[in-house]
Length: 300
Image (cartoon, rainbow, N blue to C red; front, side):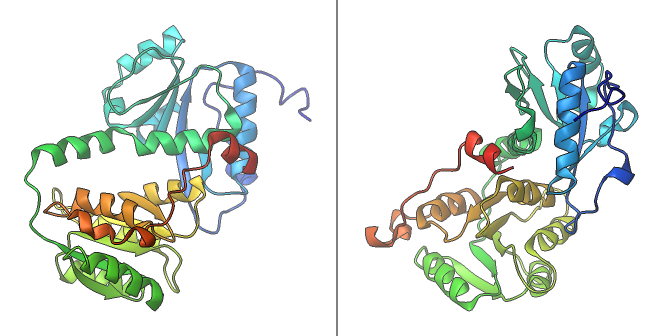
């Protein structure tokens, strides 16, 4: 229960003190700037932030001074002062921004209902990152730029069975395949050779797929980024946030649905993948829709 001191109106951009946060083993942190909202909403926000210290992704609230370093900016779209502030911040155009209660927003920004469901804030942050300005920019570039002719795919997975399964699907599409059984070998292969994209497992001995993705993306030169598709048996939206923060382009859940894989590869390879790539109908697993927001909130 909140005591009288904690029940007072919180500063608009209060941060949880580092001493209150339990260190996360995976080090996943989402830096968030929040502008506007009522004192009650800030108390609910504080509770969500405290909960995140024990479960990834950890949320850190920023002050205005550090706002430009935020991963996501959350704004009260019905607060005139917030609207005036946003209009004077040109860097917002390149950020993932959530507008609560706004009627319109810039391309790549997310609009939600003014009555925010604070316990599902991690889900809202993930959605904002998914459809942020970077995503819109990449889509625009892909629609105008010439598609690369490279049709080589690197599979990085410590499971031989998974690699063989993915190879069978890709070779049926006429795609050349290279393999690595560890993240370290995958990073080395991506640096030494040219690939159209990488299929990256998440859980592997040594460094995991998230860290491997970060290193591959860090090596990429401007305009020549290598798409990384994360593959994992973990379907939590918070793991999707981790993938997005690592720079992954797409996130697929194992067992990989051949139809979904076909659609994803069609976006990254130089030529359209043939319809026969899916294989016989008996090989196509039933599509499982993503869990509802209500269902996600119940598990958080």
